[in-house]
Length: 344
Ligand SMILES: Nc1ncnc2c1ncn2[C@@H]1O[C@H](COP(=O)(O)OP(=O)(O)OP(=O)(O)O)[C@@H](O)[C@H]1O
Image (spheres, rainbow, N blue to C red):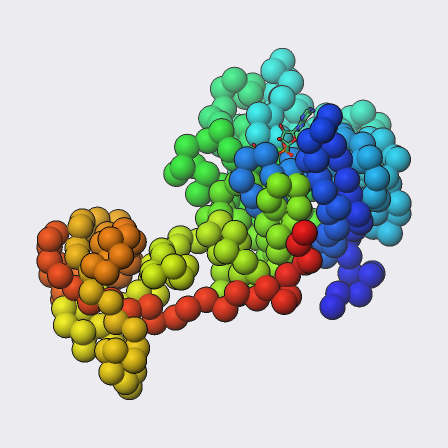
């Protein structure tokens, strides 16, 4: 595993209650230096509480937070050497973009030259050079969040903590900004922790994902590992789409659809019976762009499920609602329960 000097943030045995409610329940996580780690989970799972505890904006009931080898559990946020960006960024409305970005450097009494150089560099990185004389109210939501990132980065923080930074923006802008965030991270390499409830966002940008549920970490790993080898059904369902075929969770793109039992088989797969081919009725064919979702009814159980196939495959099959087809799960996920953190 990772050696301790490559770990930037280490949270151990963190507990945090609000009244009777355990927002964090014995959470431990190591965040490698220079990584972009996403904290992913449903609403109320404790993601923000964990991030705010790393920032020092929340005091743990028990447990510890170590940043860059220093125990900061009782250290104030100002002394933790972090940059923080929230979903709704509170910019100084009366200051220009340039002044907003320079703010942290000015209160640290840096020289004018140093401030000017740093602000120029950051405005360039976040693509706001042409907007430096504007006021926050003259920016779009996406530009305002980029300004927030520039401001957080201005003081060269040890770690960057982002709490749903694109949460208030529309889907298209969000998608653009996460591509941009990934590139920014590749340029500046600052250890970054991103809270998101959006699995696509986490899969898109993160090197590592920690999946939270009810104040506990269900699994931590690289996106691909979590997708291919989820620790349990919760992780499987939360990360990527799932379909249920005879009680078994499978990825919808791992369901093969054919017009005859034999056509539901890939090559060299034996007989339709031995390979578990099922009969189903097509309920609806939904065009999603490159992919097509086939909504199906399991003829034996009456359960609804869906398969996802490429546009080309769909054109070849030419499926219509009401038709009978044959389906088969080509790949059943390997639930890596033994490798997951121990769950109560
Ligand atoms: N200051 C507080 N007082 C009381 N309860 C709180 C407080 N902060 C958080 N909680 C509760 O703790 C739980 C975890 O909250 P947290 O904000 O960490 O969740 P989250 O995973 O970030 O959710 P979301 O995606 O909705 O922001 C929630 O049930 C929330 O209501």
